[in-house]
Structures are given as C-alpha cells and as structure tokens.
Image (cartoon, rainbow, N blue to C red; front, side, top):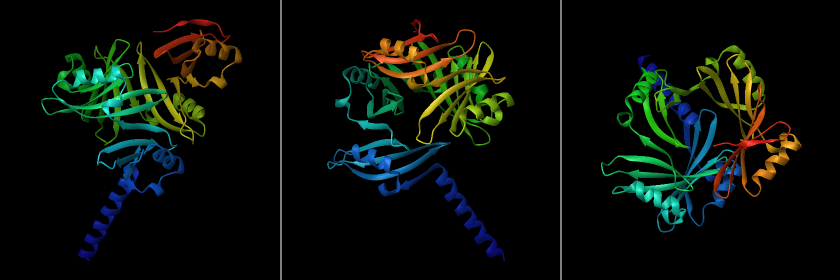
Length: 341
C-alpha cells in the first residue's frame, strides 16, 4: 500500500510538472504551429534551417520563439506572435542603421557585444543589444532607430536612494527580478519586475523622484465600478493586462485587450467607472477628423490614435514623419489643436 501511494505521488508530480510546462513553454515542430506563424517563419529563414521552436505563454500572450541555424553554423533567433506578426529577429551589426551602430559601439566600450535583435511593436522599430561589460555582467540595452538609448538594465544599487527605497517598499516580501531604466523625451523612469509571495510576476514603474507611477494589477484588485466598465468595453475580446496608474494622487486603470486575430486596443477607466480615453482606429473616427489627421501625417506613418473624453474632448495622434516623432491633437470637429512634445 505504501509503495502504491509513493507511485501515485510520483505520477501526480510528473503530471503537475507537465501541466505547468504546457502553461508556460514547450518545444514544437514547425508543423505544430499555426499556419500564420509557419508563413512568417518561412519568410524569414533566408536559407537557414529551424533547429527548435518554443511555445511561450505570458499570461494571455502567446508567442513562438524560433531558433535557426545558417549553413556556416551561425545561429539566429526570431519571435513570432500567435497571429503571425513578427515580434523580433536577430540581425548582424553590419545591417544596423548607422546611428544605431555608433550608439551600440559606444555602449559596448571595452566590453563585448553578444548580439542584436530588431524588435517591432505597433509600427515602432527598436534594437535590443546584449552587452557583456568588462566586469562580466551581461545586460540588455534598447535603442531607437536614430540611435537614442530608450532603456537599459540596471541594478538596485545603481539607483538614486529615493528610487531604491520606493522599489524595495513595493517589492516588500516578494522577489525583485529586474529593473530597466527608461529614457523618453528627457524623462527618466524605472520599470521593475517582481515576483509576489504568491508566485505571480508583476511589473511596476517608479519615476526619478521615487513616486509610484503605475502598477500591474489583476481584475479582482479593481473597484467594482471599474471592473464593470472594463468588462463591458472588452466584450468578447481578451483582457491581456491592466495597469493601475497614479496621476495627481488620482488612480485610474489602463486595460489592454486583444481580438481573436491578436489586434490590441487600450482604454483608461477611473476608479468610479468613468471612461477617460480609448484607443481608436482611423476608420472609426469622424470623416472631418480623419481629414485633419491625413493632412497632418501626409506621407508619414500613423502609429496610434487615442480618443479623450471629459470637459475638453479631443483626439491625440502619434505618428512618425521624416524619421521623427509627430504627435498632435485634433478636436472632435476636426480642428487642429497643436503639436505635442
């Protein structure tokens, strides 16, 4: 009887381990992945062969991490979303834009460049460089196409004391997994990843004076009015993440949803269930607003449109034109309301 119990425990642990693996990652063959993913992989092989494919799931986000090898033995990786969208692909340094090459070379210094991945996110291209410093520590740095450093990994001890205190207090009895220093339009922030005592991975953001800016939360953490509105706005779409944000001591919740084809959409709701803003697409806004957007963007690339509600309703448009960011506002009747920094 004792032997039977031991055997059952071993079997249970094995099955549990298998279940946990299937929820996070597992190895696959090319024929096992969705057709759209197969097409993207084949289109980016360039004569290389697939050596492995790893199914990865981060909460509700599914992707496929693909390892390939060239005839000369060089290894190249790419990551593909469930809908076939190419998320990242390794590139040789010689194929990088000149400003990116210069910036990475300066960052490497006397260290060693381990590799560079070209990343694609909502029409924005960045370059992720793995660099091993002279002290042997490898860190990742992200650069924009113009060579600007967007973010880089840092350790807790390198941060200003007020930031260290804020991050330590937020992590509390959990475990700090990593910190990235972000630089955007001259503003400095710190994105931290932690594992809670319950084993959940969560992200939060702190600004340079130690103020908590945003915190990843679950639906059950939200006030009932906010839960109700977010659920209604999501409809049949999948809620992929919710961040609690703090502005002027007022909390609001930014939710991201994904359609069955993987199309993402964001919206922001207050604690009492008031809709502050939502991401919209060009075809969804009034024709008179579309005209202003099209005239302003011209031959540039439209990245995103957010519709804002409240006392002064308007649309905020994010685009890229002539290689530079183009951000501006348009009123609900199509009036241009100026550029944004």
